[in-house]
Amino acid sequence: MSITWLAASPESIFPPVEKATEHGLLAAGGDLSATRLLKAYQHGIFPWFNKNDPILWWCPDPRMVLFTDKVHISKSLNKVIRKGVFKVTIDQAFEQVMKACSAPRQNQPTDPDNRTWIHSNMIDAYTDLHHQGYAHSIECWQDDRLVGGLYGVSIGKAFFGESMFSFVPDSSKVALIALCQQLQRWDMPMIDCQIYSDHLSRMGAEEISRTQFIKKLSPLCADETPPKQWHLDTDLPYSL
Image (cartoon, rainbow, N blue to C red; front, side, top):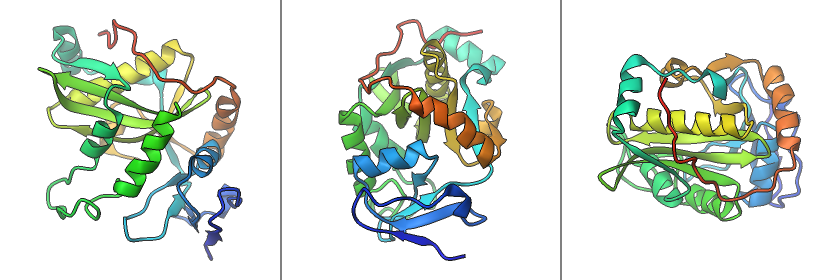
């Protein structure tokens, strides 16, 4: 199956998501402008590519999602939340969270532009989205040190999770729980987790078909809630 190459103009159109390969690759090329990225997410498409590769656009089938009212809090994690081990904030250190997510894992190369798909071009693009009120970070702090968190994109009542990190055990889990609880309060029912992982599955995420995902996504993105900086309710996360 041939891959559609997008023109550099952000107005160039993505092909139908059904045209994606069996692995979910839909298109290549284009740019990482805010216009392009927002259009992609609204159609269930996201970029994922290495620094020196062309921009690659994906829409896998099945799709991993986490319904915010189904996030799983284990007994051990519930104890961590009750003890107040971490302080959780939103939108206080967006670029710092992205850079932490890009930190090399074990056995990865140390070149900052080649070690991960979260390279400088992606950081610049998503930081721009953050300044426009579309991209958000959730931070976990311990003794004033950033130890875990995640970031993603919000359009209307949909949240698209991009990446998470944890320098201290359970920190990213607590950030995800706080996010789910906050999104529930804002009537935002679903987080796009993109592709399957054991970690997310243990947190309550599940796979649904691409058709189901797009059907659920469309009305959420159609909500006309304007973008804004987020603020976390002070009592989150709360334990069971």
